[in-house]
Length: 227
Image 1 (tube, one colour):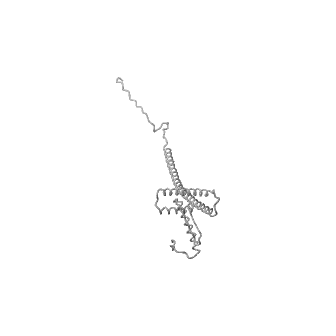
Image 2 (spheres, helix red, strand yellow; image 1 turned 60 degrees about the horizontal axis):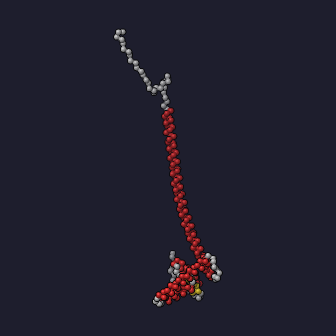
Image 3 (cartoon, helix red, strand yellow; image 1 turned 90 degrees about the horizontal axis):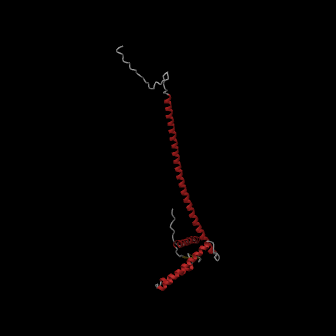
């Protein structure tokens, strides 16, 4: 069964309200972080709890996000002229330089460098970021290993089937060879038996009765008339 539809209204139970606030806040911050990474968007998020506690997230820095927001709001209320357009692009270039500097600094911090001067909260956020990155890397690595193992198992099954087919062909070949040898040996024995059952017959004087007989006939001499 699917989850029931949640009615969007104030939660009366204070404990449930606090638990829901923590879960939804973490999910909101996670989505904001993913949006900033996937789409290269500059995101600033500010949340105040019912007790007045502040929670914030910024892809670069909250100060630069707020300044950029104020400047864009001011620029939208007035028509742009060439001079103001140049100033706008100058501010945009400065903001991009700040973002680049922040990203380089964050990269060095992720590598374990330039950690001096960071507060406990900053270090904890950095640790959470590293844990999320490691979790994603491990999940991807396990997925690749699982796919490779599955592929190897399939290849092993194919090789096993081919081996069985080859064994069947070899057995059939041996049977045909044995049958052929038996047939050849039988024909050889029959020929030898036929030869032994028809001996040569010779005459008593040593002549072969089956040999050719040469006869010579002499004609009578003519008689002498005078005689």
